[in-house]
Structure formats: C-alpha cells, structure tokens
Length: 240
Image (tube, rainbow, N blue to C red; front, side):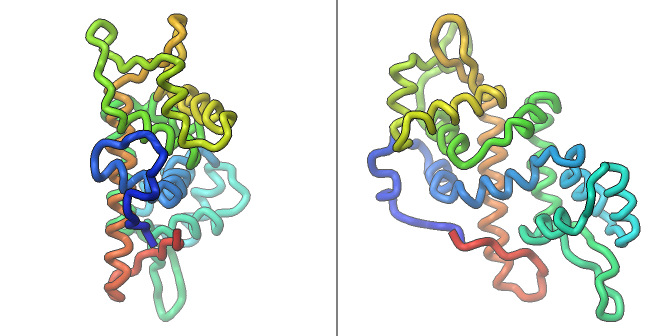
C-alpha cells in the first residue's frame, strides 16, 4: 500500500516544499515502478503502444500481431505488467479470457504521458524515457525540485553551485549514488552540466516532469481506493 508516514521519514534530508512533493517522495518506490512500466523503451515502446491500441480492446490474436510488429519475443510478460498496475483488464467470454481492454486508470496514465509530451516535446520526453530513471534519480529530482531556489533572471534557469548540489545529495548514504543519480538526470535532460562549473535546471522541463510524477502518484492512490470496489477490475499495488 502507499505509505502515508509522518515527516520523520525526511529527517536529515533537504527541506521539501509542498505536501504533494513530500507524499510523492515518501512513495517514490511505487511511483518509480509505474514510471518504468509507462516509459519502458523496450520493443519500441511496446507498453505505450499497447495502452494506446487497447482503447477499444484487442483480441489475443491482435495483441500477437502487435507483438510481432514490435519485434519482441512474447507478449504475456508485457500484458501482465500493465494488468498488475490496473492499466488494462481482461475481456472474457464464456469464462475464458479472449483479449484485453484499457481501464480508466490506463487512460489517465496515458494522458499523463501525453501531457508531458505536449509541454516539453516528444523528443525531450523520449530522452527522459531512455534515461531509465530509477528510485535514486527520482528522489534526487524531487529534492532539487522541492528546494525552492529562485530562478536566475538572466539565464531563466535555476543554477546550483557544486557546493549547493553536494548539500542536496546528503539524502544518499554514499556519494557515488548521488553522482550516478545526477548523471542520470543529466542524461534525461532534467539538469545540465555547463562550462561555468554549475548545474543548471530548466524550470519548464522540471515542472512538466514533476506534474507527470505527481499524476502518477495520484493514480496510485486512486487505484488503491478503487480496489475497495469489487466491481472495478484494477490491479493490486505492491505493499511498500
């Protein structure tokens, strides 16, 4: 289940502004897992294409053809991942599963991805997906985003000195984890190492990505609430 713990989880960490930022941070493991499912570049973004194609439902044969088009060895593993998070549901006839269709949660998850693409462009959104941001990188991103540092008027970016970034990295027990996470954010285009020796953060991209992460967190919370209603077939969240 999603964790709703006290702020003691954040003791010793840099200050995080905003209730939703803190809640997303506290539940970052689940958020990271769902992000990995939605952003996986495997099979030319097969998960994304499946979610799009399953709007009206697909039979097993139609899913098999889509699998072949994307050059993946089997589709069951990908279908199971989407179903596990309640993004799709089985279509049954005479007690047998004949295909799958997209759920309301699946529609909202796809909309979250599309919204980010509209805000920052498909190419930059693809860079984020290909960077394969994990739990540590997402923790560092939220720590930077929730820091409330003012935008530099001249560059229209948020600029951090190496010392300031070092202070934000105190959430990691090992410095290598922080450095690796920062490199991941650089690969994703969410931060930039520039010749002035500082790290620059683009407000537009970071705000769009945070809105996407927040949307994912809200979907997870909504999914847990829907589980209490047996008539709505959604997937079960892992206990965190």
